[in-house]
View 1 (tube, helix red, strand yellow):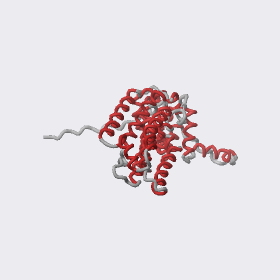
View 2 (cartoon, rainbow, N blue to C red):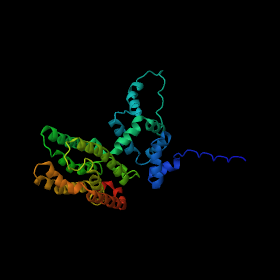
View 3 (cartoon, rainbow, N blue to C red):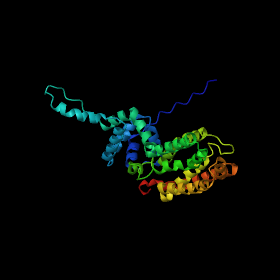
View 4 (cartoon, rainbow, N blue to C red):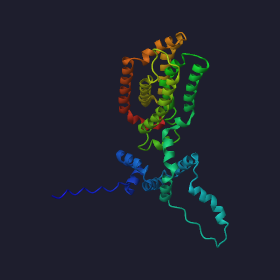
Amino acid sequence: MTSPTPSPTPPPWHVTDALALRYAEGAAAETDAWSLEKHVESCSPCAGRVSAAVRAGVAGPALAAVRAELLASVGHRPAQAKTQAQAPAQAQAPASTPAPTPAPTPAAAASVTAGHPLGRGARLWWAAGPALRGSWVVAVALVLGGAFALAYGAGLQGARSWLLAASPVLPLGGVAVSYGRHADPLYEITAATPSGGLRLLLTRTAAVLAVCVPLLTAGGALLPPVAGFPGAAAWLLPGLALTLATLALGSFVGCRAAAATLAGGWLLAVTGPLLGQQRTDMGGAAVLVRYFSGPVAQGSWAAAALACAALLVLRRRSFDHLETR
């Protein structure tokens, strides 16, 4: 009895010239565009093919200028700039000097740059959002430093309650300053690509949470513990619910207005009663327990997060126009 012949391995998929042209013109289907963008992250020849198609289009000059500025911001000097810098010296060379090697074609140059270590790193760094390169990270560090200074320097036992009260709203500041015309110098380009809109917003929100969650949770755990006080991780579900609420409300009024509204409401609701309590740990715990402790409170935050996520899915198309946010 003969064993069955194994099925042949399908050939690897690559971007065709026709798909690259449709993508450059903005006519590619959304699923095709997403597949293309994921593929070119690890395939330099296809990245060069897509880059050549885009540069040949009407947006080519503007994109080339943005790309050059981005590479320069991470310390990379394109080979074309080096060639132009050497041109005067070559022009003064004797006639017997061999002619310089012609500059590479746009497709070849794009393929080389796409494979450069700075290429993918710069894209990931840019996609993470302006929040991780701006003053928001400094603000988070200052909040943590202030809590430790109050706890260990000034001997204030209520520092942990203040950090716990502020933690859920700190991610909102990162979301507010990482999305929209006011913060993104590439908003005109990203608004016209499948990577823009809600997909880009969620990527940058995830980057903000990736900074906040470990720093604030570890910071709360390292502060002096108090019996009966909510745990250091008690802010996670409230923080997630408020972040999703900011994104959902931002689909109506913009991320900055949504973040300011929810952060202000939270601070009034939590820190207002906290200021009225005596400056003791038990007074702070009595105020915060209603927001953070127990299955009812945490279950309510989980339900609110699910509701905001559902609304965000329904409103996902509203983020396709960054210039209005």
